[in-house]
Length: 113
Image (cartoon, rainbow, N blue to C red; front, top):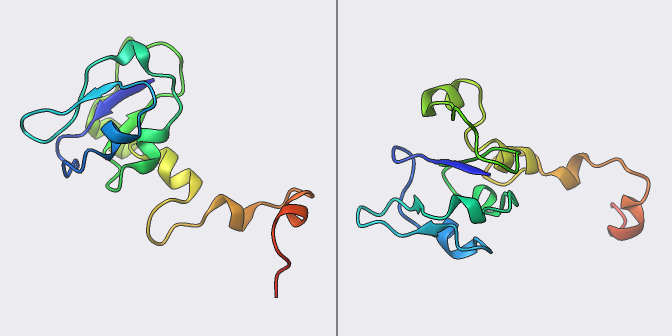
């Protein structure tokens, strides 16, 4: 479930607002989106994946956290924007496809040259 939008990192691109399939965010007057309908979050991580500056934290739980870690704690534990890093989105990151060694991957990817 979406837990945090970092006002320090957010650049106001509103990609999270645009890509959210359940309309969780609202645009705010200062440019930083707000979590307006947290209960509608489906924990799909699309917003976190599309955020170009790793300003979002989606907790991998279906219910809101009782105690949301502070932004500083999320940065220290490398959780802020961690899903985007895990899937390899962003400059200089290794994509999942590059490290995938499952047997079927050769059936769907073109042969390596």
